[in-house]
Image (cartoon, rainbow, N blue to C red):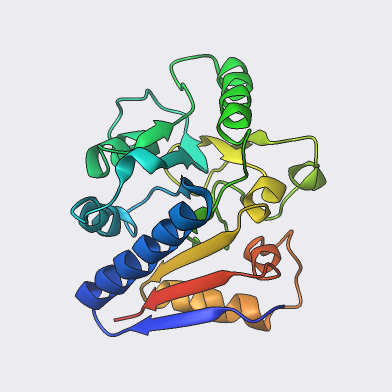
Amino acid sequence: MKNYQLIETASEQEFVQKSVTFLKQKIEDSIVQRDHCIIGFSGGSTPRPIYQALEKEKMNWSKISGFLIDERYVPPDDPKSNQYLIRKTLPNISLTVPDSSLPIKTCIQKYVKDLKELWAKHLPDIIVLGMGTDGHIASLFPPLPPNLRDDSLLIAHTHTDTFDIPDRITLTLNPILAATSHILLLRGRDKKKTWDKMLKSSGGESSWPMKAVLEQSDVTVIRNIH
């Protein structure tokens, strides 16, 4: 496991502020290097206030393209969908999302095509991740079947009985790992317990897909346990 940067925060306000500052700097660095930034977003309650605060920052939004690393298979305008969250919190960003109004197989085929077009010039600069108390990232729920590490599989249909909305659309592990930078947002004592359990565990990436991310060269964990 390679070294990763850990940023601890002492309050929700500091967690949001430091996350926004760090994420904004990463985006601006990518724009300087490539004249463009491609960023993969996670959904959920943890990043919501961060996205809301990021939207208020002065940035060249025309040079930022976003996409979803996973989506709940619900109608696009469903408030539980990740695309609903991103469109509401970051309305100025150009966003590539799964068309969940389509049958799920067709939806996946179209999203693969759309992502390949988005990534034609370069792979993602940044991916924003969360981690569930079961160790999942994106919608990769442990234990991971081997096909979710298949180089030929970009997007998969996964299923969970543990969380709301059983059917999910998700990037597989390899395209997540292909990003230049990874930012993991952790909030709450339960998430800290999960993190500590992962670090102590002898289980590999099938049990803990985040372990594969931690092997990458630019990983930052921003954490608030208060």
